[in-house]
Amino acid sequence: MAKNLTKFIWDYNLKKSNVDNPTIKKWLLARQLFFGNLNGITLADLKKYLPNLDINRSLKELLTNFIKSHD
Image (tube, rainbow, N blue to C red; front, side, top):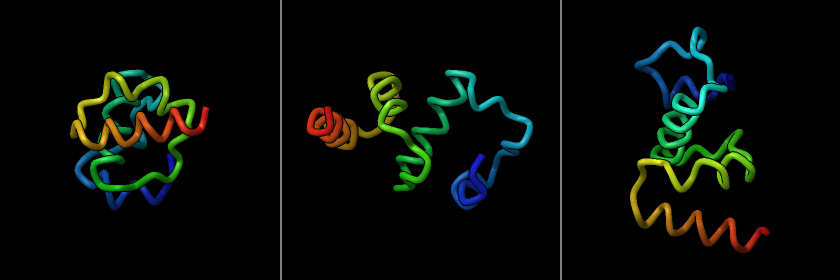
């Protein structure tokens, strides 16, 4: 887990979390995107999890178009 995430995820201890768990991964990605932190987010993860992320519709549309332009 990247150290720079602590400023975005201050209210949870991620050291004991299994970030490979799909539920946790989706939550973490949504939280990163909400705060505008794109560090460590791969295009593959974005493609895989974006349809199921609970994020703003406009942001989801922007990221969907980004993915389409990078395929």
